Image (cartoon, rainbow, N blue to C red):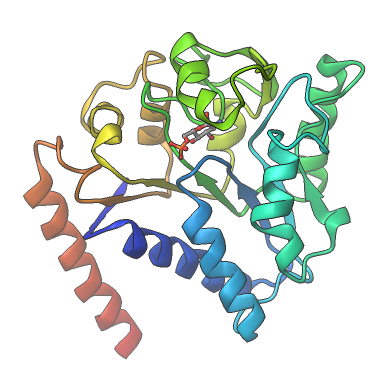
Length: 264
Ligand SMILES: N[C@@H]1[C@@H](O)[C@H](O)[C@@H](COP(=O)(O)O)O[C@@H]1O
């Protein structure tokens, strides 16, 4: 795992935006894995700004989102399809037909999960997958106890996740308890994974993900098995890491190595 510790959420967003900008510069037809939640919003705003300034283009890109609430269609304001349109797709030069979010209104959700996997494969797999982390260590909607090699499937949400996400729903509004989510195995298949976490309320989950054992009790710990996982944290999210000075030292050495390689 590459662990990058930055001062604040704005720096985390800019760092994440740089990764996507560089990926699209290298390959304009990249397949991007995207995420919802409040954490990636600042990154999306930065990508919109860069797209409108002409420094990055999504015109040939394809996207696959991690997850969706089961029971909400894309017009529902709390659906993740709606979120992605509002927060990113409506403001950039992407062809909406190239954007994919699991269908929350699928008649047969089990078949829809298989189709989603098939679409990812047909696109050639995901080049860069963006992730947030839940306070209980979930990635996508892979809640604790999720199989570490799981594929896209229907998952039941924990009470903790339902409570955490209740802030997005009105008091009398129906809040789904089920989701369709890429599996942990699906996520691990991405060629690169970038997880962003900001704020002290993520510090326990971040500690478990990086310094705890590989365990289904903390689904994000599966990233310990990934060949190219970049964990981008602000000081708050990093505050419970035991070896924080070592991680900062490694990153400084890594920077020097990159500068040397660029000078060759
Ligand atoms: N399914 C999403 C996750 O993909 C996201 O990482 C998590 C954290 O969200 P936030 O960034 O708002 O803390 O929330 C939801 O449960």
